[in-house]
Length: 115
Length: 116
Image 1 (tube, rainbow over the protein chains, first blue to last red):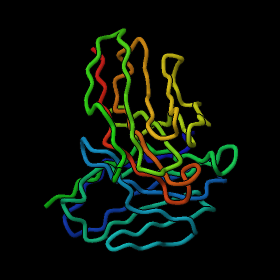
Image 2 (cartoon, rainbow over the protein chains, first blue to last red):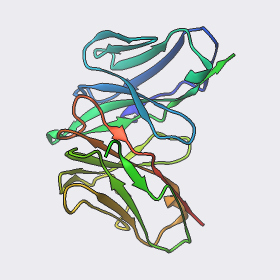
Image 3 (cartoon, helix red, strand yellow):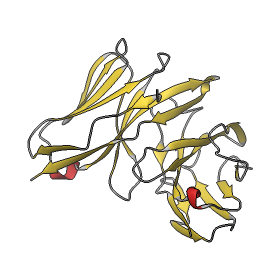
Image 4 (cartoon, one colour):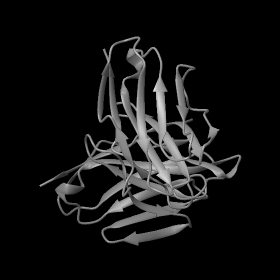
C-alpha cells in the first residue's frame, strides 16, 4: 500500500458544480496534510493545509480531515474552468524527529471543469 | 530571493553524460528538498538538507545521484552517467524551519531533464 493514495480520477465537472477530491494515507502518525495544485507544465503550488479533524474553509476551497479514517479531501465549490489542473495530496511524514519531516505526495487527480 | 530559483529550466543530455542541476532557495530558508516527478506521477522525494547537512538521502535512486549544499544556501543535484529512466522533472523546494514544518514548502519551477 502506498503511503498516500489518490485513486479516483480523472474528474470532470461542469462549471459551477462542486468538485470533490479524495485522498487516503497509511501512516497514523501523520500530523499535517496539504493540497497542492499543479497546472500542466508548472510546479506545484500550495492551496490549503489542515492539521485538525474537521473542515477548514478558504474561499471556494474546503479541506476535510478524518484522522480515524485516515482520509483527507478537498472540495471546490462553484468550480471554474481555471480550476482545471492536477491536485496533489501531500502528507507530512515524520522521520527521525520533527526536523526530519518531509512531504509525501500522492500521484494526483486531474480535474477538468467544463464551461 | 523572492522565490525558489532553479536552473537550467530544460536540459537535454545524451545517455551517459553527467548533468548538474542548481537550486537557489528562498533567502534564509533552512530546509531544502529535492524531488523527482515523472510524467503523470506525483513528486517523489529524493533528498533533504537542513542548512548544509544532508539529513535524509533515502530517496536517491542510485549511487549515480549526488546532492550537496556546501554553504547552506544553493544546492546542486548531480546525476552521473545519465540513463533514459532519469528523464523527469526535478523539483527543488524550501521551507523556513526544520523539515517540512507545519506549512509545507515552496517549490521552484523545476528542471525538465530529457535523456536521449
